Length: 246
Image 1: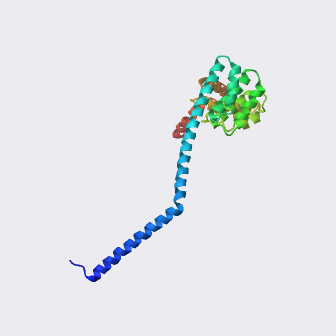
Image 2: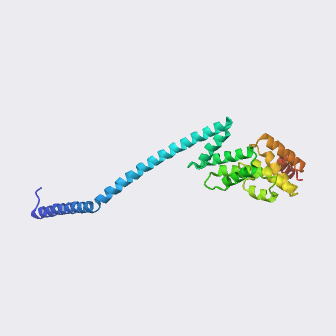
Image 3: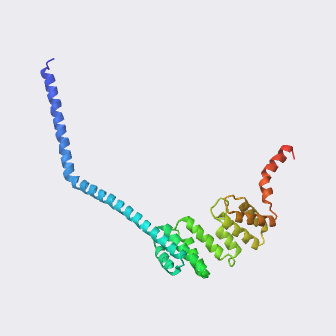
């Protein structure tokens, strides 16, 4: 069907408007690129450079960690071989390592060496530094606290030992065995056997603890009048009594 003059005029206007719109869009894009193009390109280049730098840094960190691991293993081998002097020098270098795990293990080993050499004061001070260093992993800090408290337990006031070990002397925590035993002994020193006995009983029932520790705790609990066997049987016995109307 042929278009009328009016239709042709409308179609022409529409085509013209589209051309104008396209021209405006192209002009806006050109102006935008002229104004901001170089900055966008610079931002892209900087972003790529930053990403490349991050990948390089990650690789460097991994390489450094591997090197520190090798150095730590070599130091331990020297220590086991009897070359304590060289091992101590190597471990001392690792106490400033970027990797916190190797840094903590090196400090703990140096403290252990001081204790083995009879330098108890130095060992206690070294353990205390590790325990207070919040940049180190919690597991190593807790271990250092246990070692520190063990090393000075005989001269430490019982209440001070109890307060120090309180976060660790709870059933289910990784160091409950050692922390709980020292806490119970501290209570005994204070004449509070009624508080010590239940802790020994809890240690005796903790199946994931060493058998020697559990056996010792059971004997101590029994000596303090706490029967761990009866303690475990109480809930069932209570239930039976309730059913029988006792």
